Image 1: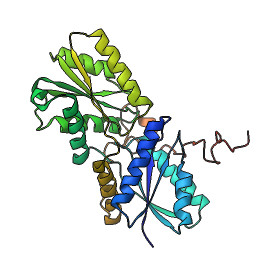
Image 2: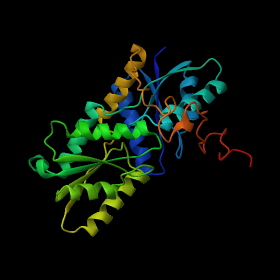
Image 3: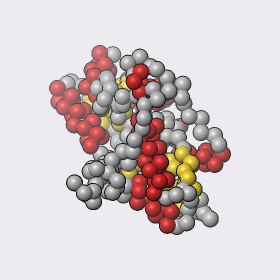
Image 4: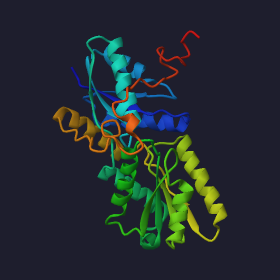
Length: 293
């Protein structure tokens, strides 16, 4: 039996973002022709996880490896996806999953971010340029700290003036606050670099907020860099995370996980019960198109 790999994305209402996810899954399949690869979304867009799992089960798989296509370990990868997989085990008795770790600030992804930065501003100008790296933002301190770590790793050894951290939702500093900080540091050239995989509502929001801030600061040179996108490097990182599952080397970080450690202001998360995320294309969801109301 060929091995089975399920790639789980967050989901988006953006048609472009859904197409980019599908392209990434295709790239993974092309790089691993000996593997049965399927992709599904946690929420917001088809195909749901249920359909992807059913496809692999129909092909005869009773053990499925799972890689969460997320950049940081937050609530979706720690709770929502595992809960959804437990529901699939109830639907398919005898089915088991082996769960991989999030992508993280992998050197190959940092190299892609570096290329996106180079496309926005020539390298010879990096020394007097401020970069504002914008993450999604979460109510999980550990996840937000991973974005700050990514910003520092991006700055190291690349000759960038500074890399500031910002978030587009649920955490501060905001995009505007990150840009304000770059201005206060004396930089007149700023690049906003979204730490996002694919197109979607939040990347669009980053673009809109960047343009609004730039319009209010006409004396500054403000650039917007591109997303990571469905590139070969990303497909390679997915396969590396998959290889870790079989090798038993996951190296998950639990030292500052809000679900295990009582962090100030987040004590109620410790040991909190996790439930599957609702997906409108999953019959079990109360918001399903097929659910009786």
